[in-house]
Image (cartoon, rainbow, N blue to C red; front, top):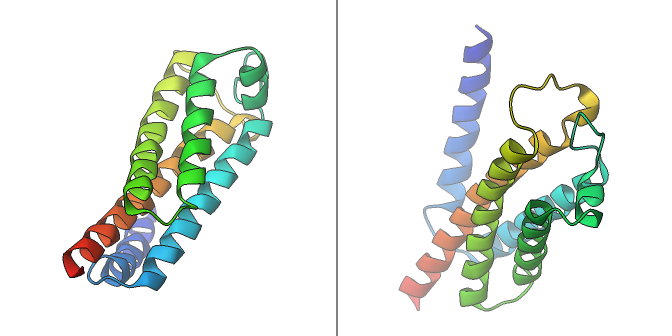
Length: 156
């Protein structure tokens, strides 16, 4: 029953969102998707201040200070994608969308490398999981943005 209560609203919401943003091109849709993608990236970058590693209590910022290459790659991709979402050129927006999707995948890979095995998570250490989920959602936003840009190219 709980599964049903999850999938029914999720399906309705997906139908509404895809019906709105996927079918036809509108400049307002591109703007809304750019703002949404930028906002989610800012939220994920904010999560760098929270604890990520249960054993040591290291934050994402602490991993950056410690020179962890996974943290630096993800941070760099997210910052670059955020900057590219602010420019009007289609090719740069598509590059930002690619960086966004790559960042989402690498976030999951990084967390499996940083926290191998099974770890009991508490509310205090869920920042990387929330960040991963937000990045996956943002990947969908980036792909819908990419589709809007392709519809724009077909019109022009």
